[in-house]
Length: 137
Image 1 (cartoon, one colour):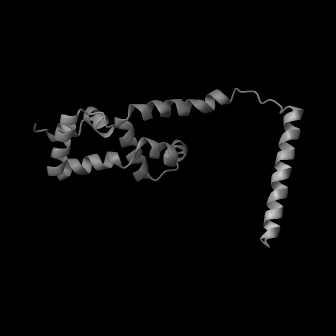
Image 2: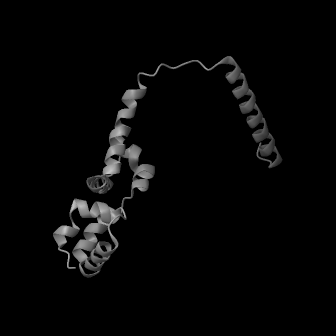
Image 3: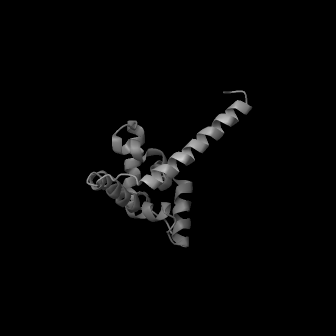
């Protein structure tokens, strides 16, 4: 089947193609078109630069804070154009600060505080011993 460039560049096709859910024959048709069309290959490559996992692990905080370089922001926004799961994740992520601001802090129970202090004290002591044995303390 001969696929038009407009079809390759459609949000619907990009979503299923890049998500790996395009049917086998259609996937092969897209691959064939991309092999012969440098313009569409370049277009799809822009969307491939950002993966869902990469977006979340590497860029999410900086994106929400507005501290990403403009070219990375553009790549992320292109990714969001074709990735409904990331759009939903972003909507949830943006709601979290509003949800947790109403949480009332509670004091740590005395028993838990004592256990935590003993644990941290033991860790600090073993770190000191390790540094001493290495001649670094």
